[in-house]
Each structure stands twice: as structure tokens, then as C-alpha cells.
Length: 136
Image (cartoon, rainbow, N blue to C red; front, side, top):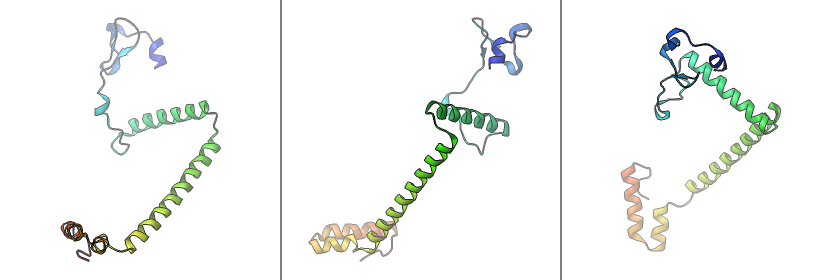
């Protein structure tokens, strides 16, 4: 973009690709789509769009690391620490889920409390959703 700022406008004020030089300054006036319409899906981008996006992302990332006075090695260490925490949380969730599933069904607990209507409602929900066992 800095090269565009210093370049003289071609005859007639037109740049390649149909861009126009604004009357008030050297910045090109290029029509753009609203942000909502821009899809940042690397799989659907052309190789050129992907390269431009990744170059911008890398530049922003490196500037952020510089602002935070972090090195690449420190960023990798932080990422590894987050990954280890994520694995530990996933394991805890799996343990809790396994103990919950292995416990007494909710409908049976409702029956034990004497809340028969709620127990039947739970069984009906399980049947409607096709969850096995449908009735306990």
C-alpha cells in the first residue's frame, strides 16, 4: 500500500483493476463488501487470497508477540501449557460424565422421592428422544 501512496496516478486517474484515485488524496477508492459478507474460510479461498490472509495473520501475530515482549519459544510454551490444561479438563469431564451415566436414572430418583409425575415426564422425554433405555 505504501508503494501506492508514492506512485503517481496513471493517466485519467485509473489504476489497474478499475480502482479510482480519490480527488482529495492519493489513496485508491476500491469498492469493498461489508464485513458480514466476507467469509474467512481458508478452504474456499483461492491460493492468492489464502497467502495474503496468512501473511496478514502472521504479521499481526508477530506484532502482538513483540508488544507483549514474548519470544516464539515462550509462545510455544504457553500453547503447550494451555493444551495440558485442556487435556486435564477433558479427562475430568469424562470422569464426571461416566460417574453420572453409571448412577441411578433420574426417573428412578423421582420415584424414590415420591414425585411420580416428574418420573413419568422424564420417561416420556427419553422415549420421545429415542434415548435407551426408554423406561427405567
